[in-house]
Length: 255
Image (tube, rainbow, N blue to C red):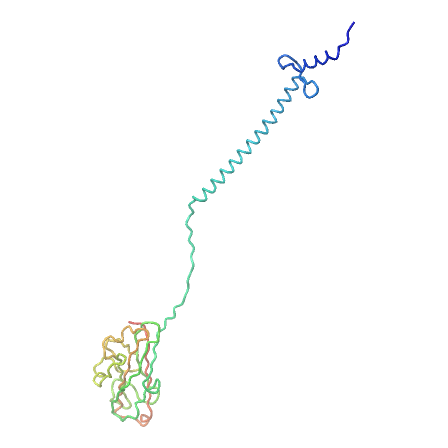
């Protein structure tokens, strides 16, 4: 006859099974029930694999973050220490220099005209008050001088022997210098004016009472200009009227 298991004995057996180990038993309580040991090991292995996978992924992420940080640092260091090739750019500056050779003549009487008055044939006269010539250009210059008849029939030349032939001479001097004498016009080389331009620096004393005063005339510099006129020894009827001559002073580059 089988006796029924008492309640106390049943509880005792349950507790005994709960204390069994993996080495000596086949079962273990999980939660409120009994789970075979093999199943428990499988569950533990799965959990460990999941944990290992997560750790592995986190390790990869950490490694990637570190690598990115290193790349950024190296990049900044590379930019800071990089030697760039030289590059040249240019700008063009353009300008026009207004080179201006110019003179201005101012007469002591009647603006830019000097009036000798009424003269006789075969007469010599000279100016006592000079015309003033100014280098009003912006460059150092030398001057050329010439003369033409603009009214009347007198011809300017080197001699007064023929009819209506007159001789006009010119001399430069320092501003406010001495008035040239008659003999100065005769001894200075090249003082006779014609239509041909006479360079004022010819032989250094041409048309000048002082050596060198017509060389390299500076901007705004002034020179006094004097004249001597030899009237013709004989004149035609037309030669008895007004006779006017224009004197040209031209600024040029120093020669």
